[in-house]
Picture 1 (spheres, helix red, strand yellow):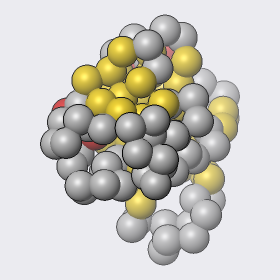
Picture 2 (picture 1 turned 135 degrees about the horizontal axis):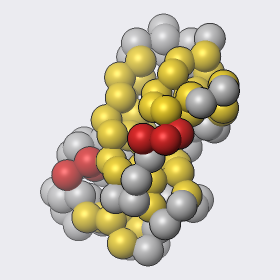
Picture 3 (picture 1 turned 45 degrees about the vertical axis):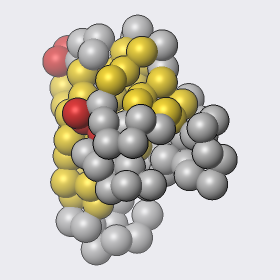
Length: 105
């Protein structure tokens, strides 16, 4: 099922938009013309990543300072942790994601 997240005209650099779809807590991030959709909470300490800092495609957790590449989800500080990515889709002027709200992908 397609879920609208934001109109493409409303995207701006530095955007960090928390979104909840059913059991999914997601974070939409837009920086330097690129947009990503990742899990909202740090896989290490469960901190809300929208409160972290964002620079050059790297998101830093506000809790323990782990960094995550938005390009691939990897954490160079600790390879055991990785952000889950979700594929973005377009529907006319809308940017969204297809998810099963019950928890499936």
